[in-house]
Image 1 (cartoon, rainbow, N blue to C red):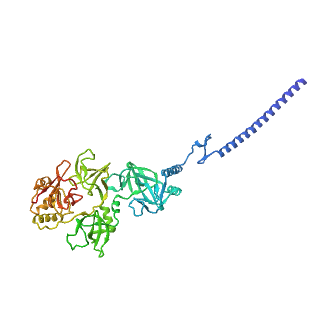
Image 2 (spheres, helix red, strand yellow):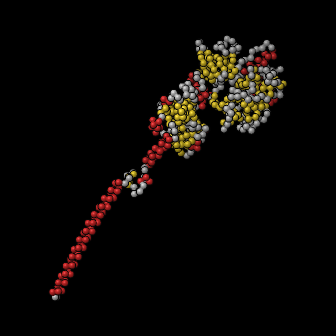
Image 3 (cartoon, helix red, strand yellow):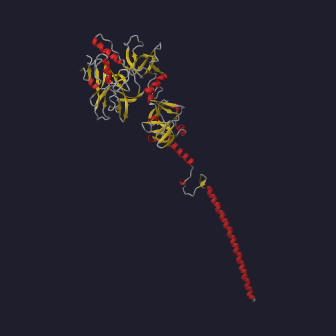
Amino acid sequence: MSETNHQNDYKAALNRARRKRNKGKYERYLLIGGGILVVVLVVIAVVLAATRPVSNGRAGGPSEDPGTEETALSPEEQEAAELEQAVEEAISAYSNLGIAQVSGYLNIRETPASDGTIIGKLMGGSGCEILDTTEDGGWHHISSGGFEGYVSSQYILTGEEAKAAARENVKKRAIITADKLNIRTEPVIDPANVKGAALQNERYEVISEADGWVQITEGYVSADYVEVKYCLNEARKMDLRAMAVNQYDNILVSKVDSYLNVRSSPTQSEGMANVIGKLPSRAAGDIIETSEDGQWYKIKSGNIVGYVSADPKYIATGQEAKDLAMKEASLMAVVKVDGLRVRTEPSTESKIWTQLSMEEKYPVLQQMDGWVQIELDAEDTSDAYISTRDNNVEVRYALPEAIKFSPLEEKANKELSRRTQIVNYALQFVGNPYVWGGTSLTNGVDCSGFTMKVLQNFGISLPHYSGSQAKMGRAVSSSEMRPGDLIFYANSGGTINHVAMYIGNGQIVHAASKRSGIKISTWNYRQPKAIRNVID
């Protein structure tokens, strides 16, 4: 091999060595550079992760608008957030929030005075809308629970204090939407399990909801007639029966089965001469004063002011009277004008078939929009309607009260004396029961059975039917009628179906209904159809 070729081979080997060395160097540089790049990227990722918003321990994805970023909450956190929102909504529902700061409840009064009539109660922690404040600052005019009234301002938190207190008292409650809703012991419709009633706008704390029922602390109510939401408790109107009791300052209630005499003076020495009224069974009144010997109460009952025996056998007072009154109070339509029209249907276009007298009270069978169905007598319960739109009738829970009554004196005239005896005999049975078709003055009679049996005792025979009795004797006018005469009333069709006996002084005695039994009423408590003299 020539020297030239040898040198060329040497150069070629040297070049290969150089290329190999350079390749290894470049690979090392690339490996180092790649490692550095990876480290830099990791550091950047860590920095970005550390500076991004984190929710629930997780980093969210990148976002140009952090306000729209979605967050994941646990069920507990979601519930807490919803509750907080509900609380704020409940508070914001009031323009001028007030919170009752009392341990029990705060009385709501009809007028801004400490002796104003109590019309409701605001439980401690309950909310109200403050509408106004009296000039002296002593009373707030509020709206709560669907009605308005006045509360003492010293027991009401306002402003930020009210809002702070409200946040502790907002709870899930059932708001009653029906006029009246049964509260039941079990979530099933059964007349036997009704334990009470809830009234419209009342609020009850919810325990659970299931299968169309809402469980409240008092029992179960239908979910169809409540609105369930987070809210404050609000005022409740005074129980309607309690309102009937609370209208008396110092209540007493008659415990007799019939009537108790009301006298013009505290003595029985005058016999019947000082009797000015009758206090029916379970009737109520206010005790004005007690006689010095403790034997008599001076009372006011209805329009009658007089004296009744204070014997506890006849009269209940204190808590006993309140308990009796709560039990006996019933929904009544109290007539406020003379000649109130009774119609056959709840419409001003329907037939007028009788008229009612002022101050008479009638049991309410049904309340409608602008109308009320009343019970006139046992025979007239299906078609007697009176309008409530003109404020001519007041529908409220009420108790019987005293009625004006002066007994007939024995007359020297033989004929008048006989009439007096008939009337006084009939009055012995006041308070006894009404029984359809009955003929027993003690165990039960209907209207015609009552007049038939009373007059039979004096040798006067009558048929046992009011329509037939109306054909007996002779007709007389209202200006001519005398005690013992019979007064007849008709139904909406004009057919006579009720009879009563006139007892003088503008009054009658009659077997009225199952609710009332034998009672005393004004003679024109509804418009008479006929008057007959069957005695002479």
